[in-house]
Amino acid sequence: MKNRLIATIGIGTALLGTGALVTNAYGLQPQPTSGNKRGIRMERREKHPEIMRAMRNLEQAKRNLQNGAHDFGGHRAKALEHTEQALQECREALKFDKR
Image 1 (spheres, rainbow, N blue to C red):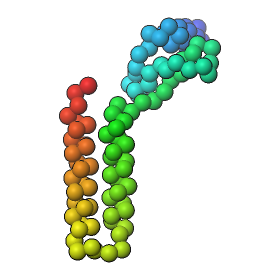
Image 2 (image 1 turned 135 degrees about the horizontal axis):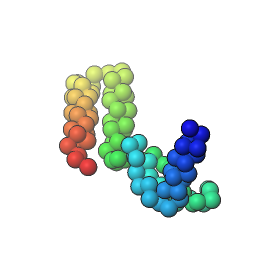
Image 3 (image 1 turned 60 degrees about the vertical axis):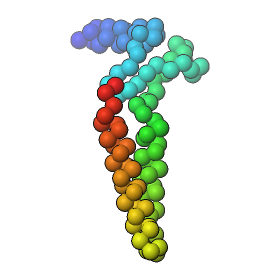
Image 4 (image 1 turned 30 degrees about the vertical axis):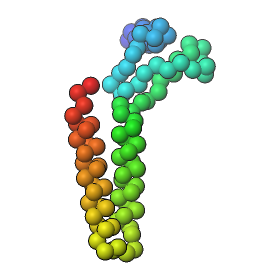
């Protein structure tokens, strides 16, 4: 059992060292770095960072609009509605992606 574990670790290390490991289920990819002997480190990357960043910003805007102190003649409520629609469009865009 111990030998099998060592062999598995050895194979994984060999693959990582040669750059053969391209990606895994968590979206990790080898990235060049000067931080270790092999010059490789694993880094989590979002699949669509621009859309994800936009969604985080829209969520913050939504919270800000919800906490507004005044009605502003219905414009705050309308902006909140549009913000939720924008979030839904981003969610749909991520679902549509076939990659």
